[in-house]
Amino acid sequence: MARRALKLASWTSMALAASGFYLYSKEYLDLNDFGAVRVGRAVATTAVISYDYLTSLRRVPYGSKEYLQLRSKVHLRSARRLCELCCANRGTFIKVGQHLGALDYLLPEEYTSTLKVLHSQAPQSSMQEVRQVIREDLGKEIHDLFVSFDDTPLGAASLAQVHKAVLHDGRTVAVKVQHPKVQAQSSKDILLMEVLVLAVKQLFPEFEFMWLVDEAKKNLPLELDFLNEGRNAEKVAQMLKHFDFLKVPRIHWELSTKRVLLMEFVDGGQVNDRDYMERNKIDVNEISRHLGKMYSEMIFVNGFVHCDPHPGNVLVRKRPDSEKAEIVLLDHGLYQFRLNYCHLWQSLIWTDMKSVKKYSQRLGAGDLYPLFACMLTARSWNSVNTGIGRTPVTATEPRSASSSTTCHARCCSSSRPTTCCVASRLPWAPAPVPAPSSTCRVAASGHWLRTRRRTPVHSSKGPRSLLGRPSAYGRSTFMNSFCV
Image (cartoon, rainbow, N blue to C red; front, top):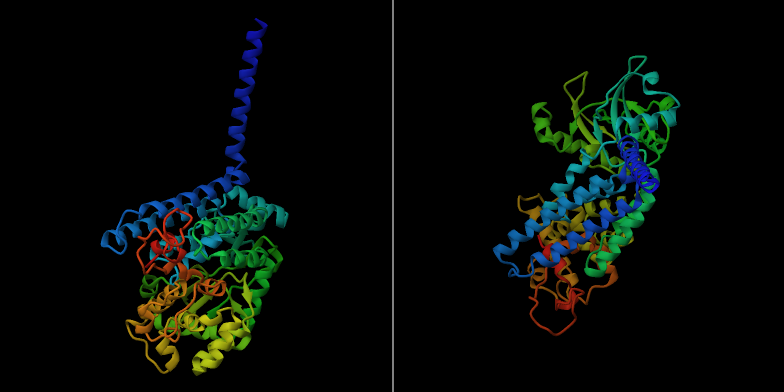
């Protein structure tokens, strides 16, 4: 009898404990807070994507129509998995995903189009979390600070989200609130990414994306300090005050902290939303010219450059007091001084190829300075060499420039030169290039994802990849699957 009572009491206690944990977790606990969950999710996604590339294209003749169609499907599946991982782990993962989504010239279109959603539709913090951050940083509840506060955010980004609110004095403001767990998780997330990138590189030696992790490691602490962002906003507003087409929202310092930033509310459409501009009769060409002026001023005059210009951070709108269009510049968390970059652009404009080489090498391009110049200007090498200001852009040139950079990545990655470089008359074509050096791999960075194998793998001789398959010049199939 006693044993039965003890057993019943044990089961009852377990049931109550499980119910309590369930109710507590639904209200207060997020499984995403557990490091093991985040690590397991990231490792599993990386493994699935790698396995997909290793196995899906193996039995299809390389270069065939079936191969191209299948490769596109693998790209799309992998991009969706990567996007889901970024949305699930949030924070730093979304920040890196946003960066990948902007690499149109380096990654396949399936990746960039899928990851672009992270620019403006990142996962949101709950209102409970928003209230918690405001309470901890400002010492008051939301209803004590604002007459109204929209529960639905205007937009959610990797590190924060923005809510529209009205102060007691009637001013409409945008309240930028940092996601509460980003600070604690960011350093661990970067370490996890570093380990995963190194692991993928063991499988695919040509995978060179450690630079992206290094950038996140260096810049994330700056972007997590909203007071730094406010100071940058005021500085750039003062520097560019002579541009009547530029609007930088004013900062309300009395209600701003490292995790909460209050600024003037300004609405508009994203700079890449042509439908919005057409509906509001905004001249696309005029906006393009204004963007060029704005960034030229930052780079060449002030040396203080907004370093996160993705479409979610650059808005366009009609000014309320006139029919003129203006650009609204948001998210001033990351600015950098770029003197060598300034000199490089001056050299490109003046067609001073000796200086182009000099300043490209200072920026880390090494002997690949022609490739770097083509990537930077999105122009062909012939146009760069002749003068980008004197040579009009043709309809086919962007594709030609992309093809040229891709072609050089192929040459650089092979122990034999290819004929395509000779055909395009690039300066590196005449002499055979050696096996890829570390300098070559670092400078080419993402262009490894556009590289293809020029010789089919059919010989059992020579170096073998980590997959156990023969690999031409020691390269793996991952490289081929990313040919675009």
